Image 1 (cartoon, protein in one colour):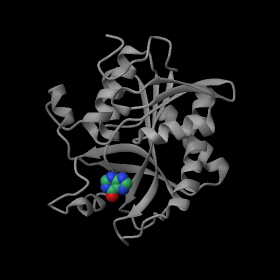
Image 2 (cartoon, protein in one colour):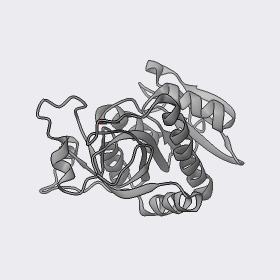
Image 3 (cartoon, protein in one colour):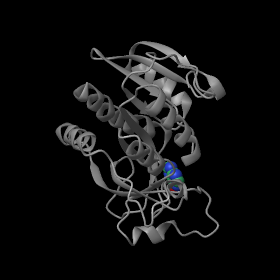
Length: 237
Ligand code: HPA
């Protein structure tokens, strides 16, 4: 199955741990600023992917695109055809919990969703998509050691950014911390394929106060999140 319709990489081009931002240009930025000797392995549909070194460990970074169908395709191919063992999504999310401040890091212990993605598994009930505990524990430990502000909890992976129903805050009643659009599909693919996944996010906007981060703030908080993700990749080898 490789190369796939969406990925030009050959077997061995991609590391066992892949960091996935939504934006492919972010993937390029991460490769250029955080990895040594990055080599590009994909540009099909502009979904840039690179493999390089971080403190002597081989790490890849690839865009996921926006939404569950997009990350569903790319992560499935990485996990089932390219021998990838760990995917760490590094994204932004909108805060819906009053204790969250802009730029805080959120670790998704679980990813609730309004999507129908789980219907493919024909389960007679509601599947709870969860993070891999070893990745989660490692990443939270690093954030703690670095003194970063963070929360660990449930998030919402939504199918809509612009929701006609304006119902996102209903999820806050259930203790959900933040909203983004990809992690539930990533966790379900990882579960189905017996692989490991984690989603972590910087809070880019608040649906409670309407505040949004400036581009400078986004850059700094992004760097903190990348430190957590890369150090996690380094620790798990
Ligand atoms: N909604 C969905 N996805 C997001 C948001 C949001 O408010 N902020 C960042 N990603």
